Length: 155
Image (cartoon, rainbow, N blue to C red; front, side):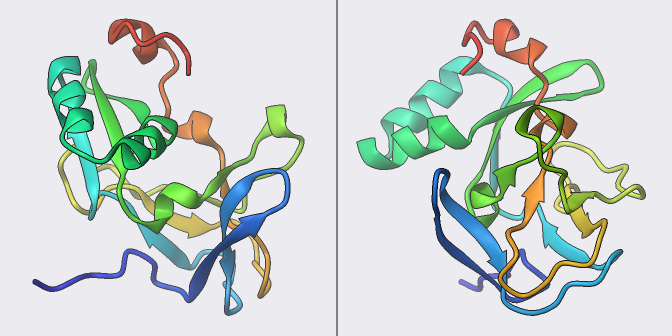
């Protein structure tokens, strides 16, 4: 079994005060450079029952993390429960409600679909220094109205 690193740059998961785990750059990342590819290790469910079965099949401590990391996507008017099962799940939230701007975003050329391993190509929107935390705006991909669709409420 081979493992493909979803990060194209050297990064490290570390403890971030006040946040828990986060991802920091271990080398300079220039504006426009590809940073992370999602969907390589993403579990996606179109049915809440299948998601519940998945949670029941893994250790309780991991299931708690998965619930924390999950998000709702909308593709072609269908909602999906998704969770990234790689270190990308440790990329923390940014945006107006957090008072800090993201430094990585989905690539503007990203027009792929659910289940397509090329989707969620995250690129730097500014230069990122060594030791700087990678941040994205969860609102760019987490569809809040989808929580009600799956009767999960807003977690």
